[in-house]
Image (tube, rainbow, N blue to C red; front, side, top):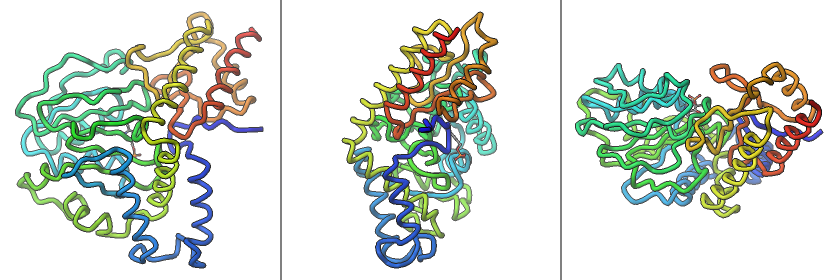
Length: 355
Ligand SMILES: *Cc1c(COP(=O)(O)O)cnc(C)c1O
């Protein structure tokens, strides 16, 4: 039976990216050697790193004055690397979920941290709108897509201080005006690659301003100066990221991704709103285009297990909601085809008829 992969992360990748990776693992560039057993400083891999960096710049139309690096450590390492490099005295954070909260907590070790707003009281079901960003903050940190709670900031905010964004789960899902950000980072395993690589896009002029000693491995400048090759980079995930970006380009780039993603999301949200058995958990205006969270509607709560089993029997994988929300979460990242979302919608309709 065909499997429909709604996993939250690591998650679905374009079939082309998986196949190209598999080929390179067996025979990289016709060298007769595996991608797994060649030097990261050899010309074949060097070309991959250079192309991955320039492809990210091309797809996001990154302006002059910004650098792109691929690092290890996951988005979680960025929670500390960002304040290490950028926080002199004070930073502002918008608390929109578990990941945003972890980023905020980590920054507390480096200076004063102001939580400008939080939707914690409402179990992070919406994005706070009216808040003040202190003008003397070194940066303002947001999480554009809240993977666990299914809310998303889908516009590029205007901030009086450098804007730092965790885009782990919505990178390349829409065009982004990079000039409005000081730094963008994310773990690749949601929307870009397999686990193991982290992307960072940073405005060069923000670096080199803090007084503290920054260990080499945590210093963005060291990684920029060494073209993401200060130490051995995660070669396989970088290779796969490049294949995903080539696929995105072939589909028509971030504009085409956005169109596709909006079509998938509205198909699924329309069914959630129409089907009396289900209801969405996120405020309608803040609904994520990437992670669709829903629960059984009032009066139908006891059907949760039975719908889960029914969906599994239809090939749906990974739709169990995160324990902090319960119910269901369908992650419909860039690589997810419309047909799989349609299959989930058909399953919901069929389940409704059975009741
Ligand atoms: C998954 C996720 C993280 C954590 O990423 P790691 O690479 O596991 O550290 C951080 N932020 C967001 C928004 C995520 O979805």
